[in-house]
Image (cartoon, rainbow, N blue to C red; front, side, top):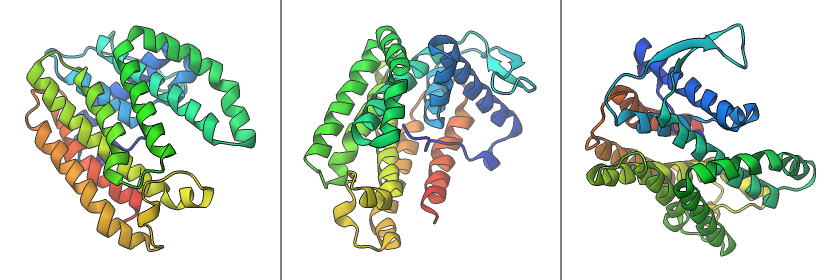
Length: 280
């Protein structure tokens, strides 16, 4: 996950933004408590979205306590007290981060590769712990990585095929947020659309850099040198479809709390983010 699933901050009420920050800080705290202080650096907005979804489907308020931030001891932050719903998103963050690190070791050279090799033991320990606690998430992510590797090895130029493993994986992970069969289908659809959105946006943002470095990118064969033309013709229609379909599915989700924050992310944040990232 790449940090593309964000809020549209100006459109949130102050109390909604404070609630969002509390979940973000709580997930950071859960990572540090369970996997070590260094694991806090793996936190992203995408996993905060996963935490919000996981917390939103149960009744009851999440008790808040105010404590000092580890990274800024002079500042106090709001935290959700003892919320079990944070454990799965934290494990997913560590499992994803481990596989991302192994991919970096495979792709990078020189000092960067050496740095990744040096920190791998930390990630390996955290990955083992997370995989043991949530084996279903481990299976989903490992399968996703294998499928993505196969497509990259065959130099797949189909955007639809290349985006499918990420979309499928996020759909399967979101399914784990509910035990209800009907809600699982809705969650899977939301996850699939957002996972596809993430992959397409990341491919578009990295295209020119990947061309220079020789790294895989499914959009290379469609790029004629005119970035604006490719974005207008190929990327924007896909991103709008993904965000609109995620919004339609979200309307069917039985959300108990944080509905306005999740709605802000899906209806406004996705579009705001891709416009900023693509500079349009």
